[in-house]
Length: 278
Image (cartoon, rainbow, N blue to C red; front, side, top):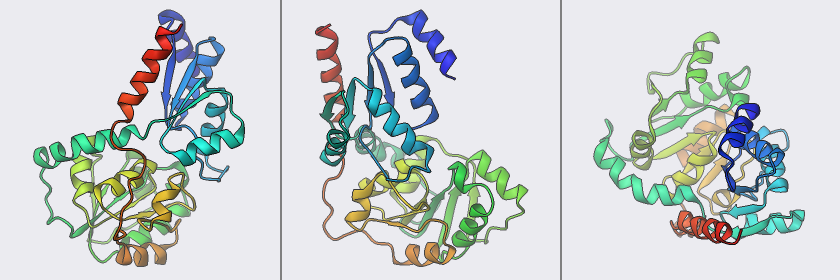
């Protein structure tokens, strides 16, 4: 992946490379940019779960250390970067996913009506590599089977394959669905009673939609969703999945987290100012 990105950077010769998040492509793009001597900007900078066993955590740390411009979703992540002594410019801009959620959720609900009564079902997603292999996937499936409401389970192809390969049985209430596009999933999640997921993005999207979340991980980078009581970490404990889902609720007061829906505008202004200054 990195050599292919490096080849493209050599051909295009951009003024700046912008990477997002904490995936393998984020790391490959960041390394390729630095090797090419091109300034690097990182969106979602400063997030930390404290769990170095997660590849995503190691990616966040490395990319933030080599980034020239670091766009943070909140003051907590900005403070983390200052404590770590990074050299890049730090800007608190909010979260671009908040921008997208505010804009597209109403469109999604109108364009993709759901097949369930709103607030009567759970949505489950499981895609992280650590969660789709034995013994964790079997424990997670056991937990999903304990949920007392219908569960819409749009499954990543790898997850679906491993369920079949490991001969795991889903309860009749757990409806295995094909993967969904962004708008389809936004419609489904925003009208759910609860979300059960190992996705970082869905944890915060659920919060913005006003839907409580149960997270199938021992830690999260979106720590404020846990702190305000909207998100519960259950790891792969089957009993905890069932009980946390039954008890899940949103806090009575819901503070604004990760920006006001204008992060992309702030990022654009910084990038334009940077380009004009070169």
